[in-house]
Image 1: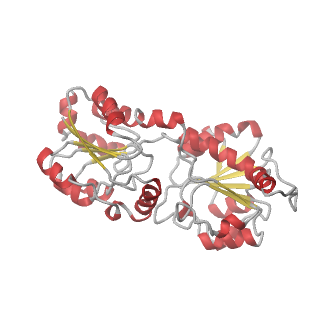
Image 2: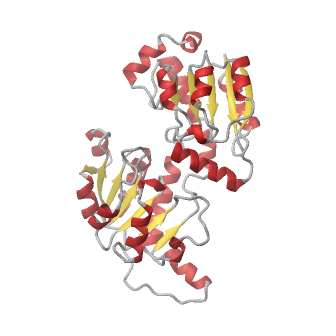
Image 3: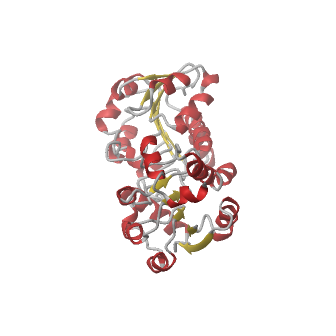
Length: 361
């Protein structure tokens, strides 16, 4: 078995190598490093790839030569881009594993065309983001960060209107995957009503977490807190725009710990400036790092954090375990919930033709 590990400034060769050697004893492993090393360049590159796909990213030096000579069966990446050209030149490639929850840095279409299984690190940040989202709800609704910023500037600030409690409120969750499910568990003690908009989640999952399925319009018009937890796709880009913001209660808060482009930027800024909604809490932005003159920084009805939701010690630990557990599950049982590009029935058919599955037996 030949494995190519693509490292970066966050996960290096030593960290990745330790887990790979334990998970796949006897495998031949090589490493290449994705170049960005300055934090600001790294952030800009990641955001560019998230918006525009892997083909726009800074290329990995020597990867095409390594692919030709080494010909790996597995590629493991974190943030490094895996492009169409890399996939097409890797003749024996069968699995691409992504240490992130998303796969924006992988050309999934090209992989699917060749029946290459693509794994994401499903659930890696779910606990962290769920907790952070709840924290953002509390902070923005009780003016915690806004009050602190005022004190730092020598102001004894009081809000124009009374703050709101989460207890007894209606929470609208757009997207009901792992994060929303974890968040729903944490909201039980607040005695809230949970509304969910997600066309792809089965009814039994919503029932398990006490959520009611509704259409987007109903969710927006009834919720006291609207929290975004969808993947960014052509269908979900700008899912919250001017029309949707007008549907929300004037006393409602909008929370986004997912992807900035789920919201139309100018429409949100206008809604906050005119107090069309009561406030917003954002951990993701259309440009990262946030510029010093961004109009969001001038508002007193927002809570802003610099893309911190998934960053915990525990997330770091899960990053290097969950993905490989999912891959081992597939090699043994020929199916996995962490495969992003094939349904369960398709997974089994593809597994029947895979060299790695035969070796695992």
